[in-house]
Length: 316
Image 1: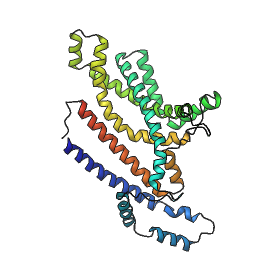
Image 2: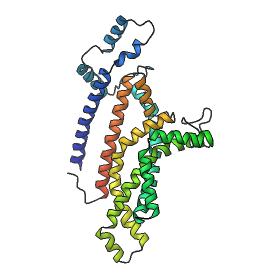
Image 3: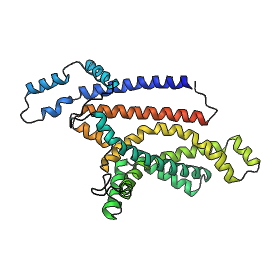
Image 4: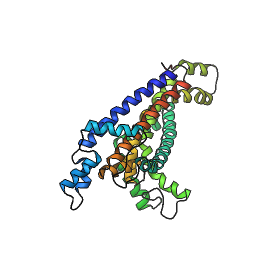
């Protein structure tokens, strides 16, 4: 297993280098580039802009700039934010908890609800419940996440007044109940699409397991339906879902970006859009690298978990 882990870490390192170079090149060569915000300052002359470019090393070839940035990154220096002069690591860290809280809550909701729906859809294949859940999945996957967010705000905040429309907490409050009230809508909206995906995959996985010989053997031994379900069907159906959880990370991150924007949630997604609009490229690159690391680490953990709980899988 150690050999497999080292191999995966090597592959992840190569992928990080590719992602970082492409991202750096796109941001640097984009119209306006990192100097666009300086050019908008009143009274800023071209001579002053050129001087700033020289001081920041932006007049050098892109490849030279990239390797200079990469060498600092490896040493733990992720750069300084153009907007507020703070360390990029500090800026990202100050928004990381909000994103992890939102993603973690949404993941718990989607896994729990989606798996339950998928199992019952498989057990009641062809029933009204099965058809209803199929329609729900099609609708949830067809409508953009931001639209669900706007509908939720309109109904539960503007019309009913049950939940706050945005932000992470109320000014002057900050109690646990206040955090929960602010978290409910964005977490539910972010989880909605994943519930549809999990329910469909779990339904398929459960149907596959039900038809396996070991399930028939368990039934032939006289085990109760409940015991067969809990001991043999559910556990084996969840194994492929662990891999799916790793593969879903990029989608969850993308959904978090949209959800945080709609609900003005102070996480990494909103920080990414704000930094991109301000041309704060050091922060954008830092967020890109942090997200890539999170996705690669999540996939590695998912694969290792599957290998540990399923003896049929060998890591070579």
